[in-house]
Length: 183
Image 1: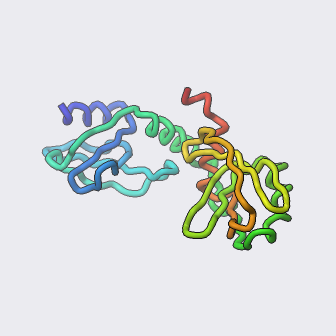
Image 2: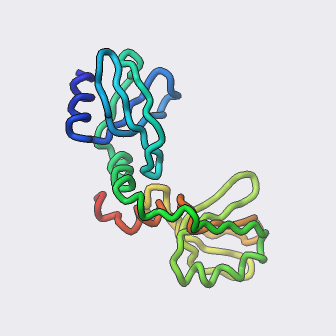
């Protein structure tokens, strides 16, 4: 049965996910099947931004499960089709603490940019800045899949930096701006 699924994916150029015994639980290799031969297949793997990253050979006996057409894969296929829209040189990261970041807030609010805020202890939050005072900042959170993720208020003095126009923020914006495609 799995061999037939792989052959169908090859013939239809369907994006699929394969979990193997070599991967941690929940991790998948996602891509397009390039070859099915003997007891293995070759998958042209893509990363979370839709770019090709390699061609692993997978033995059928190592396959735990195959996923086809799940919501993540639908978004990934969309990203793959639009990967040329990414500008990998556009990222701006500012490592300043607290109030030193306030001068950037007005332009980021006005532009509606997707922003990642960094906090102490490797914590971060992504979304659109909404409003602020001298002490607090409100952000309309957006998940990595482009879906709205609620509104949060944080003390400005806990922020240690921000990033915008990075490939992650571009990915989130592309998915957010095209939500109707997925629902």
